[in-house]
Amino acid sequence: MPHMGRGSRAPLTLSGHIDERPFDVAERSRLEEELYRVQRELASRTHDLARSTARFRDVIERNADAIVVVDGDGVIRFANAKARELFGGDQDDLLGTSFGFPLVSGETTEIEVRSRGSQPDYPVEQRIAEMRVVDSEWEGAAACLATLRDITERRRAEQHERQLMRENEGKANLLAVVSHDLRTPLTAIIGYAELLEMGVPEALPASAQQSVQRIRTAGRHLLYLLNELLSFARLDGGREEVRIEAIDLRDLAADVAAVMQPIADTRALRLWVRVPNEPVMVATDPDKLRQILLNLVGNAVKYTPRGEVELEIAHGEKQHVVARVRDTGVGIAAEHLARIFEPFWQVDPTQRNRDAGTGLGLSVVQRLVAMLAGTVHVTSAANAGSTFTVTLPRRLPQPPAR
Ligand code: ADP
Image (tube, rainbow, N blue to C red):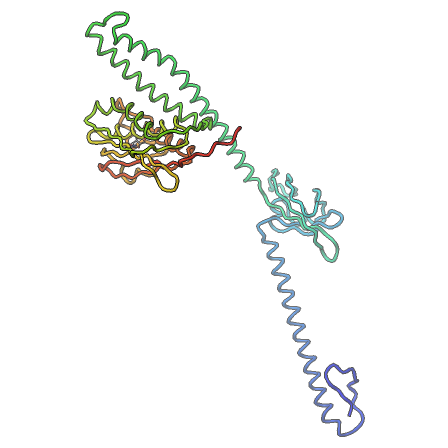
């Protein structure tokens, strides 16, 4: 009996023994069935392939980036919707025309695209695109696939930002120059008022004394405002440098308290300094830290009509030190807390009295603290006093030499 198993190349012609018939008939129908199954499968796969090709084209067509296929002669063979938008034309304007940009496979380049639209409603506009090129093929021949991303808006935004930065720098410079130049005549005004008060060159009549005292007080306040503007401008212009020195924080706290004591004395205020018994050594910029503490204690005194202000120095966690300024004053309502560190921001800007500040004090504090690699933190509530906590590293690393 001839063997007619699967895969056998024996012809289907039936011959020979009558006994073999039943077998051959069965085999034939099995093969027919197999053939039919293969045909069906082929049809279904062809259908799937057509569908997935269509899907694939659809994905490319709708891709967020412009996609262009350029053949070996530099001619555009395919352009998706985004590419047509970028080049400002329709299929007829693009397909079959020369691409016109050098294509280096594996490279990303920036190109300037001018509209090629034949229709008048396509705006002639220059766009900037970032182009990536990979080797590919198109209808059986080698081709390049270029992906283009329109970065015109990004470039415009960057340009705008640079412009703003230049303007800001200009403003900061102006502020620095103006406040510096105003300080010189102002110091003279204050100095001569002080001399007059002291009776130089000769004693003033009692009727003039109060006026001279007012000149001096107003002058000092103006000087304080100018200094605040100046330090803000210097910080904002990035012109401050850090000069590190090792100090005992207790000495600095005593200095600050000595400066603020006369002001506290003019109010019903007690000013306390609380420090540990042993030295609290820090390697930091003492001038900047002094200004931070002067601003914070100055605010505490300014916003506490009566009660107490305490400046506390303590060892912090993990190689940090802590300076805390606590007052029993007017406090800051929860809705204002988030904004108090913003430049020129004040809870009550209408309160323009003799003590009024610039709204720059805390923004200066925040910038200085950042320069010293520290943090500043506030807890407060309306009418419940405020606590400002500054945490600084015990050792500020030396800034890189310029
Ligand atoms: P200013 O020059 O107005 O004091 P600051 O930047 O130092 O500017 O402070 C911003 C605002 O935060 C102040 O106008 C004040 O309303 C509020 N503030 C700051 N410190 C205190 C404090 N210790 N107690 C109550 N309010 C404060």
